[in-house]
Image (cartoon, rainbow, N blue to C red; front, top):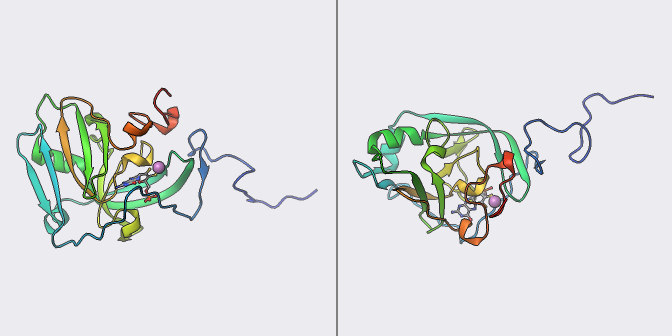
Length: 202
Ligand SMILES: Nc1nc2c(c(=O)[nH]1)N[C@H]1C(S)=C(S)[C@@H](COP(=O)(O)O)O[C@H]1N2
Ligand SMILES: [Mo]
């Protein structure tokens, strides 16, 4: 009997502990999932806005965003359609940095992330604070490809990837939960992959 050490297959062999239940490792692929036509956004007119229940409504231009303290994420992303991508790295700015400047009011409990295309997704404020969410414009040290949300997308890697709005335009701070695009179409309100919160009722 002989073994090939390190032999791995996608559907056999030891399961990577980084994979949440029901997920598989997509490897070097990166599937594209987009509900709307892919927009071409020019960075010289691009803006990101934090508004709603904040002390200071804030809008940043592309250059202003890049002047903020940089922040990177290294880890894994999980799509509700069951693929996960392990060991990815993104660069941009922490949502904490943006909220520290806009200063959410005590009444703010949720955010609605809005895309330049009109795509929306909702999150509890606690899911985008304390180092859990980013606005990112680089992937693996290169500009984020347009089909993956470039020039910039939201990144909330601890939740299913539909929460990571591509072509993100801003965050609205709310005192209530407001279901976004997929959440209105049967997907779970929060979407924790470790709890398999895929659909409403999960
Ligand atoms: N604007 C926008 N953002 C979006 C989506 C979308 O359709 N439009 N799809 C979501 C879903 S369901 C997933 S799985 C990821 C896919 O990101 P990717 O295409 O970079 O893999 O983006 C999320 N963000
Ligand atoms: Mo998805």
